Length: 595
Image (cartoon, rainbow, N blue to C red; front, side, top):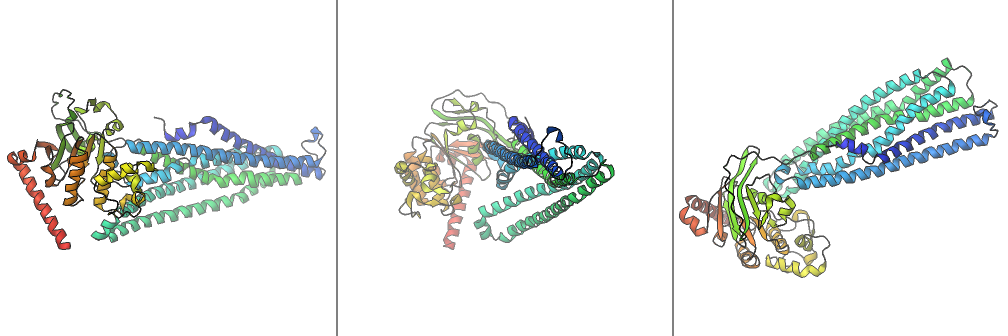
């Protein structure tokens, strides 16, 4: 795959060549301006001019030519900057779209190792930083390189002096600027890295601020953030100090170059200098040599800075979803396709690193069947649902949804068959209407459908804290809703979008017993009676209402059947239900004592 750097350089090459040509024209016209001004002054003072062969007698022609050259140089400079910014915006859009697509492509088990702050930093810092090469480095490099090449030759031709003194000074200054710029780029890289880490910490702190406050961890979190900020500040101080040194060196370049160039003229010039030649010399040295040297350290700094952003983006783009290890379980014969099944799974295995999360999972679920998945914490219930959604690296020997082979479909095609409610109901910063419909700017004509979905989910607009009804703005992550309200909004969303198979991951954990009973009557056993339902739950009250129970232990289905069947024959299941009942009783007593 082509590197991001080569993409930046060679994407739309015609545009890059036009930018370089504009910068070259700006330099050529800029050099011609002092040449014409020299001829103007020399003619005024009676000195024979270089253009006497063209029989140009009016000094006004020379000063007008100098003025037009300055205008042309400035115009090409502005065009260079405009085209560079336009190309940078184009590449930002390309990188942002690719970053978005890559983030969507990465599975849950892969993304769990990357903090949210890192992704935010890539979008906010590295996407613009990667294109600095176009809107800063390329125009700055061209406006530095062309004058440094053309100016010494112009001085040599105009004044008939050797090139080597000026070239030697230019090489020495270039080496010094390169070293200082490389140092600055390291500070820039550390600045980005430290900022990303701090953003990650602050993001975690903000997302969990209530829990942190309740648990009394605020001091420890603040200490960690302040410590990271201190390291970041020290790096910033070093970065600013190095930048000031670069500016100081750049400011002294004019004096050094003037001394060297004037010394060359004194020692090597074969004729006495005219007033026009002195003015032209000061113009060329003071503008066309001094300015590029002042830009040079920042040219290198921007180049190295852009390089680090490109490498960070490239590293993320090269991230691959975690590969699951080969499974040792025997391959069982595939069952024949049966249209009565909404879901058929055989040989589902999931490894993450050295952990074997799911082991040889086999089950078939009939169309319209209501199945509960139970087991101790860590037995693999949630990962089973995510694996069905193709959000993990799980391997299947057979995976069919209805009459379609899901192994031949991509993740998006598979997910179209499911509606999913996570343990923590997802709420976005939008209106209640948009949270149910999951569409921004939804047509108000669909309000009846939204209200019906909320009503079935036991979310009554006239009793809940939603003063503006469906137009009530819900804060980010549902901060102004309780846990039970968030879950009920998520259930309403599932009803609104009529998917055939429902994956419900402990979606009743935050509602009270009375609300749970109503949800079963109106939704789970009512409006959804004809849909296929898979419910992960720790509520014993739900188990005698489902058609079948899958009992997981250590990533395996060790038994399945109705609630009565499992109680009668499986001692581990009886122990599990006893433990869950005790925990529920203890929780009620704890809530009663707090009340």
